[in-house]
Image (cartoon, rainbow, N blue to C red; front, side):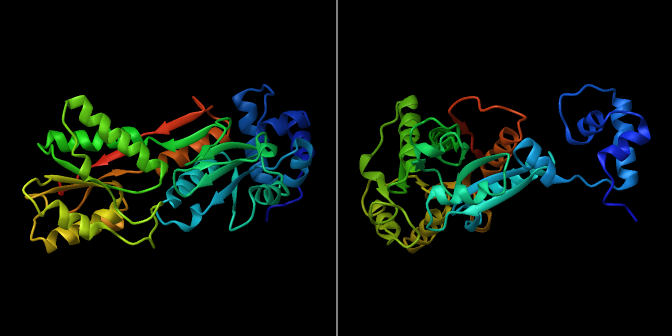
Length: 336
């Protein structure tokens, strides 16, 4: 049975090397040694059952092998949890653990203070959707990365979805399928929606195709898109197909809106994609892949964001710019 009390001194004495060399081989660091020495130390540590004293190590270094995340609802959203899965995988590959605290009505300061008691190596802030967050000035040297959101002051490096480019890509995809009369049922009040509308307009301008301004419509009533907000999809679809000028494609703000559009079009006796093509954003697979026909959509880059965040916070890469936009992926299915 392995002895959990084996020390660095024990290993060093057996191999005739310094304790500093053993610590460097097992815990990382800049000390130089041959690969042969490093492998011998690791092999003996495994044989003896050496278990590092993380608390003592943390007291010496000032931190434990922990990455802290202050999460604003992220862990409660099924598709946004892809960020945390990828982040955790990247951290584990480096021998780091992830500790998440959900804000849940508390202040950011209180959430950070809770994590700081665990002596994390660093702390990041993560959001369930792309938004601008006001980080208190007192935390600008504490929170090192914004994940799926932006720092209002533009000081803390941020990883966010490339919303504008995603809209350009999906509109160009519709154009290449000879759909040029596109309606857009967007998500009111969100930064993602504003950027996607800009991309929608840029794609039309690049082709010299005129936009029907009356066809850019909010999917729900109210200043901000929310699941509980009253849907306007059915009445918008009825109006869009009530006159002689009709769209040949509808771009939807997300897959849930697209699901509603499917139902509304069928009430009008219209077929997808023969009468009208449908495209969307998110790639919530439980929706997009199961619609009939399956939905063409832009997949949110949550896995890539989580992986990139893990690499940055583990020290393997640096942010390339203050706001790093991570590209979506076009998922082609049968709705276009």
